[in-house]
Length: 113
Image (cartoon, rainbow, N blue to C red; front, top):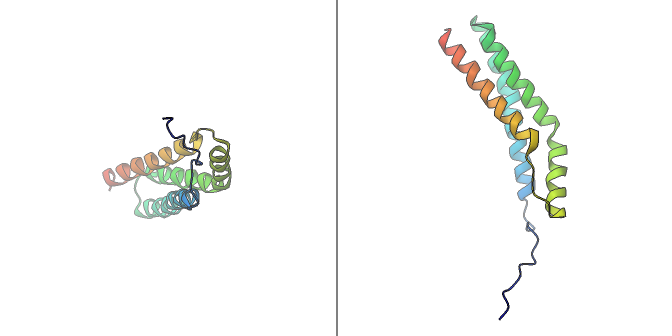
C-alpha cells in the first residue's frame, strides 16, 4: 500500500498571515509609542540623556518596523504561495534591537534615579 501524499497547501483558509501581520503592527506600535513616551519621561525626570537616547532608538526602530509591515506581509504571502521557506530577515533583528534598546534605557533610567 502506497503512503498518502499530503497535497494540501501549507496554509488553510484561516487568517494566520493577517493575525501575524497584526502582531507585527502591535509590536512596532508598542516600540514606537512606548519609546517616545519613555524618552519624554526620561528627559522630564532629568536622568541621563543616554536613557532618553536608548528609548528614542527604540521608537525609531519601531517606526521602521511599522513602515515595513506591508513589505513583510507581501514577502510572507509570496513565500507561502510559492512554496519557499520563510526568511524573517532584518525585521526580527530590528525588533530584537528595539527590545534591547528599551531594556538598556530602563536599566540606565533606574540606575540614575
